[in-house]
Image 1 (cartoon, rainbow, N blue to C red):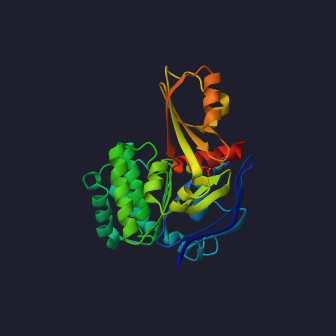
Image 2: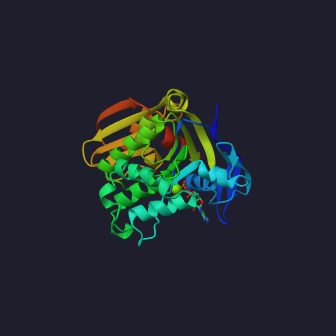
Image 3: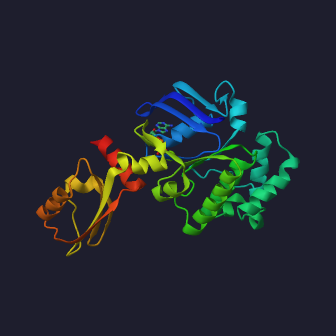
Length: 307
Ligand code: ADP
Ligand code: MG
């Protein structure tokens, strides 16, 4: 088995935050891996260390067997990163931006055919000669993806690639990323669209406060202890205006007179929840329960940590 990403005891402290508190992770080449976690969990910091943009305080990180510090050039060659932020030089065209990126990897005009292919795949061909500053956010996002792939890296990391992206572009991106995965790329995806992680990823890590709090195949997460959660949907006789504080951390959805809660079968009882609602003057007229999905597991894990 080839190891695409190896992290051993990775620690990174910023002056005010312990962003990573000892992360161990092995991702096999060819996996579609989901890295989930709430805002500030440390996902981007971990990715920046993979890309050699940030140096870990201690621990080790390697990409396809190349240490990101001592073997930086080879590690970087094997990795494509789609960063969370849209940062470009606004005065270059799309094609120039991709050629410049090619140049960083020592590639010249011989790479133009691949650049054209990327532009076509990402439906950017007709904007190839437009200046970056004239592009919409969604198009810039697509250029970022092309930029990450310009040197044909076997490992592709996407840091929240669909944040703020419309449904149509999201579908285009997922289709494209799934094709790359089928062609043999290792895909590492951070997202807070849990449904998408659930449908795309084979294995998932959940990061919270700089620690991995769950790491397993999607199926084991859903079937295991954590997945023994329950989704409770209640409908009240009137709009629910205030949610009892004690339930706030469990709320998945709240719209009008409907409330969805992620419960932990071990720790929460439906009766207790209903009592709590009644005590707050919420009259429940209907209720449904469903098996936990990834979102419930996520909420259970991250809210439990916060307690
Ligand atoms: P995520 O990507 O999961 O939202 P980040 O890795 O961006 O999380 O951030 C983890 C924590 O580290 C946050 O508390 C963030 O404020 C902090 N942090 C990230 N980068 C820096 C930095 N360059 N300087 C100081 N603190 C930082
Ligand atoms: Mg981030």
